[in-house]
Length: 278
Image (tube, rainbow, N blue to C red):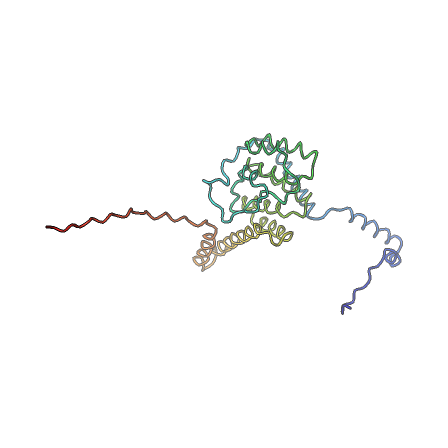
């Protein structure tokens, strides 16, 4: 038996006997209202979606496609992502280098991506692919992989607000998935919102403590936050040089290792044969 005493829960009838009739009625109404309220996280997500909707309506301008991404000529990332479920389709969409954080391409596969969508993505016909994805989502709204592909296409088109809205919708429909929080962190980091990026990554790790990509991203966010803290400390102190050097040392950790040029190989010289003089 546990050494700690746990009092039994009071029933609703006991509560009504302890309060006067009008107090019991007020209490029951309050409980009813609280039961129908959404959580703080849901309210925050809904507020962000409304803000994105207003911004899209205020500026319906078309954005230029993004020409960079995870391609051979782009700057390398510090870590690699080997957890791609549908690598052939994921590689067809070049996600921008979101600061230095890693974008998660696909979650655990719950639904297959239709072949017609896959063809459009591989052909880089992204606007048509988004329209077709929206059509499919009306029939199968819980196809999470389609929503992830949609978010990746929006990132490719530099439609960052729309991508954020799509990712927030994924967190509302599938709160058990950590991948959208990782991608939201990458979007926040790209805008220099390191605290928000940290919060998203910590949420992802609460859902899956063994999430390697989120752990690596969180470590790099902490490095960036540490460097910013040293830079702020160096502004008004006698140890300005010391703190400035620490900030530079931390930022050096974020740079990819430089490739050493291959040593020029000189062809071996054939020895000159010696001959005996007569």
